[in-house]
Length: 173
Length: 166
Image (cartoon, rainbow over all chains, first blue to last red; front, side):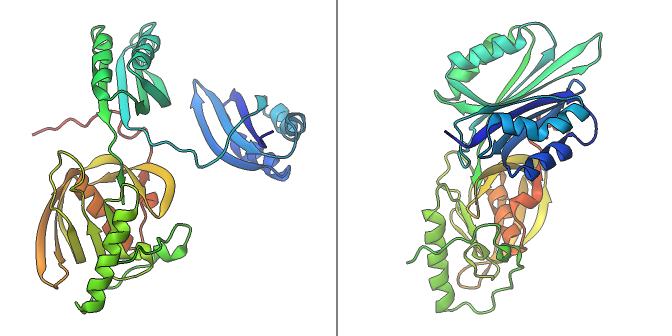
C-alpha cells in the first residue's frame, strides 16, 4: 500500500488553520507533499498530500484536537501517488461572462470532446449580487491540438461568454 | 566536446554572482563548445548560463531557432552581456535545467536590446523579443545569482490579456 494519503479539509476561514494542521502532522512524523489550499466562499479548503506510515485512523487522531478546536471537517484517504509526476500544461483557457447555470458544464464538456485534459481549474464568481460574473481559468493538455479546442469553444462563445485559448509556450533555460 | 554537469538547486553556488570574462582565448572557446553541447543535451533547452555548470563567468548561450514561427537571432553567444533597454511586460511560463520538475509564471520584458561580446571578443548589438527576449533575461539572471524561482508570480496573474492602449 502506498504511504501517501490525501487530506481533504474544509472550515470557516480563520487565522491559524494551516499552521496548526501542518504542525500536528509534523509532530506525528508525517511528511508533506504537494498541496492546494485556498479560500472559497469564506471557507478555507485544503487538499494536501501527506506521507506517513500511520494509518488513516491514526492520522485522524493526530489532527483531531485541531479539527475540533477550529471547527473543521476533514478526511484522509489512502492514495496511489508519488512526487515528481508533473506534466507541463500546453494550453490555458480563460472563460468569463455573466454568471448563468451551465457555463462550467458546457465549457468543460466541450473541452472533453475536443480531447482536452484539465490539469488545473480555478474559478471565481465576481461582480455583485445583482450582476455576478463567472471567471474560470483552466490549464491542461490539448491532446488533439488547439484547433479542435478553438472549434469547441466557439459553441460556448455563442452564449455571450468570452473564451480565450492561449498556448502555454514553456521556456526551459 | 563534453556535456557538463548541471548544478541543481538547492546548490547554493547557483546564487553566486559571475565575474566578467577578461581573456578570449582557446580555453574560452573550448568551454563555449562544451556549454553549447550541454544546452543542446538538455530536454527542450534553449538557453544556458555558465553558472549552471559551475563556471562563474558572465557567459550565456541562447538559441531559440528550433522553435517554429518566432523571431530570433540564431545562436547567440553572450559574453559580458548587458541589457540596454526594456519594453513591455508579459507573463510567461518558464522552467530551468537547474530546477527540474517545476515550471512557473514569470514576468519579463517583451522586447529588449542588449550588447554582448561574441566568442572572439567583438562587441555585438542584439534586439530580442517575445520568447527569445524571455530566454535571454532568464539566462542573464543566472549571471547575477537569480533563478526564475526568485521572480515567480501567481498562476492567477495573467487571467486576462492586457489591453494595449496606444
